[in-house]
Amino acid sequence: MPDLPQLLLFIVAGWLLNLTPGPDVLLIVSTSLRQGARAGMVAALGIFAGCFVHVAVATVGLGALLAASATAFTVVKVIGAGYLVWMGWRLLRSAPGQWSPDASADSVPLSRVFWRGFLTNVLNPKVALFFLAFLPQFIAPDAADKTLAFLALGLLFSVNALPVTLGYAWLAAWAARRMDGVRRAMRVMDRASGVLFIGFGVRLALTDSPAS
Image (tube, rainbow, N blue to C red):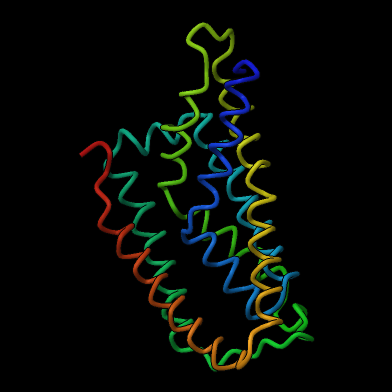
């Protein structure tokens, strides 16, 4: 593990990185706006669980395989890109937003919300590659057990991200309660989210393999 100054730098860097909008943040915000904070937080927990998968994958070496094998990267990339485009298409074709200050997350099974967040994160191979690129910077060259240090930092990064993602969910729901013309705003949000999800999927599909 890094010393205290390095550890604090790692935590701050993690917060800043998680504040950057991406598919995960977009999913949390759009879910909170449509169904309230509870559903948004469940989506965040799904993403949180997905991060643990990436940490485990990177720790055991599959992340290295994705970095080294163009074929493995392409397979995961195509699946992930297809999923993002499918979600974007669903948002573009959705009915006008039904969110209201009294909306209940029970209108959509929370298990479905959770798995949507989980798959959005797990099917993005760039997350595994991010862990492989970011975490080693904070592992001392003379660390006795680099694998254990990598796993510990990965878990810390994931836990460290949770307050940020839960905060996004709460903030989006809080803002929606104070917006005029919520239904019209939700219609615009659905369409914008759909376009952005498709854009994320296309960008992921066009990402070159690190091995190429």
